[in-house]
Structure formats: structure tokens, C-alpha cells
Image 1 (cartoon, rainbow, N blue to C red):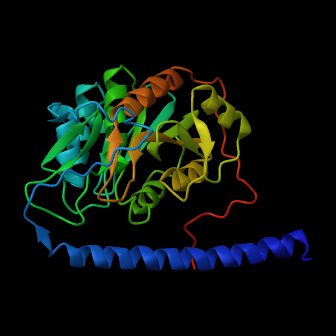
Image 2 (image 1 turned 180 degrees about the horizontal axis):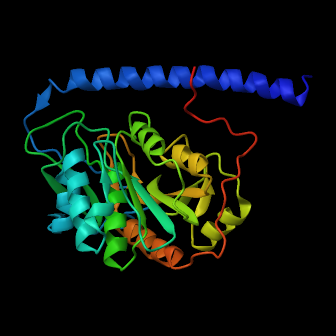
Image 3 (image 1 turned 180 degrees about the vertical axis):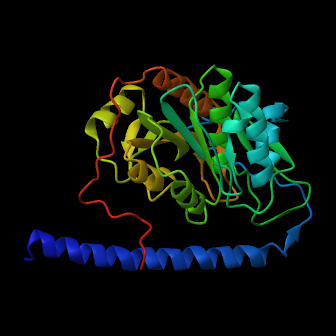
Length: 312
């Protein structure tokens, strides 16, 4: 049997190989998606698949309508850069100083009055944005006038942007970090930490970019006190591959959690958002942001954690 240190080195090498393979698969998938874009389907397709967790009464008539909420439509239909502009306007309306806002094509950052940072990303895996948001039994899905096999809702991470919008409406004024290019490798987050090197005195960070309705992922952060803090507010620890806090949290030395946004079957044509889960996350996040610890939750590296992004 290998000693612990040798075993860890071998595990690190194996993980590097797996990361390289996963990146290759990710790239090939994007190539195939680009090919399929030339195969249009000239009918309106509503992509939503109910499951036992969310629709249990199959004897009730299916209620289909379109979302008429102006905020939801604006967030889901905007391009990535349009959404950064939209959020800048929202932040100014909420009292943030326009001169304090730093905005590039890769990120938007503005300091807030609360010693907490909230994050989400504006990009999605889909090339086109939906023409309408369909509501079927309390579930959002995408609707297109003329769609193809690789169009989808974009709930990952437009639902996260919507949650931050709603928290602003509730009166919260945290530090806000909105990233671009998360889906292609967290490149917006990498550029952000190069430009904003110093942690601005926050106590912890929460990102809204996670599957389901009650999950929290910490990646390489092993601060048990922070995990207990998040768990007390209704989220269950899970594991995940990567997101922007995996880049920013260790760079700033502050603990962070990636929280659920009510999205299901993300990155697929069946992607959907369960509205009751979104509302539940907003309620729990609202309560969490009102509890600011006296001391910051520091980032403590999990000694067995190997980051997804490795420089070869």
C-alpha cells in the first residue's frame, strides 16, 4: 500500500486526466450543438417534463399560461451583455452609486452596505433566448416561435439573477458580483479576481447557481462553522463540479456556498424552473442575509480537494 502522500499524488494525476477528458467532452458537445443549430423545427415546442416531485395529481387538468411578469421576461430574454446593463440599471435604482459599479464584458461588481456578497452568472449554455416563458402547473419552461433541438430556458443561471433581483427588492444591499463566461470555464471569475484582488471586508459569499431547491455546495471550502450556519437556514450539503465561487472564494480567503435556484435538468432542452422552490430559496436567503456574523467565515481549504480547473 502506498503511503498517504504518494496516494494523494497519484489521485491528483488521475484527477488531472479526468479533467482533461471532461474538457474535451465539453468542447465536442459544443461543436455538436453548433451543428444542430442548422436543423430548425418550425413548430412551437413547450419543453417541460413533470415528475412525481412536482406534479403529483395527474387527474387535474394541466394549466398552461405564459409568464407576464415583466422582470422575469426581461431577465430570461436578455442577451448576456444586455443583462449586465439591465442589472446595472436595477442597482442604480436601488441606491447603489453608479460611479462605484465596475462593469466589463466579463463581470459586474459593486460594493454594498451589507458585509455579504451575492453572486450569479449571466451566461447560459443556450445560444438563443426564449420568445416566451411558459408556466405549466407552476413550472417555468421555454417556448419558441421557431425552435431547434438545442434551444432551452436558460434557468441556469437566469433564475439566480432573478433571486438576486428579488433580494434587492426586499431591501438588501449586499456586495453584488455578476459574472459572465461561467459555463465555458469561469473565465469571468478568473478575470474578476485578477482585477479585484483584495477581499472588500465581507463576512461570507453566497452564489445562486445550484440545482434543486435546498442544496448547498462548498467545493474546496471546509469551514465547518460556515456549513452549520448555512444548514441552519434550510440548505443541505451536496457536492458539485465547479462554479464561480470555486475561483473567488480561495482568492479572497472568505467562505462561500453555492445555493439552489429551483432549476431542474439544467443544460438540456427539458430545463425547467420550479417556482415554489425559487420562492422558498428567496425566503431562506432573505433570512440568511439578515444574519451577519461578527467575525468573517474564512476560507479553509479542504486538504483532499482538487480544483476542477488545473493549469497543465
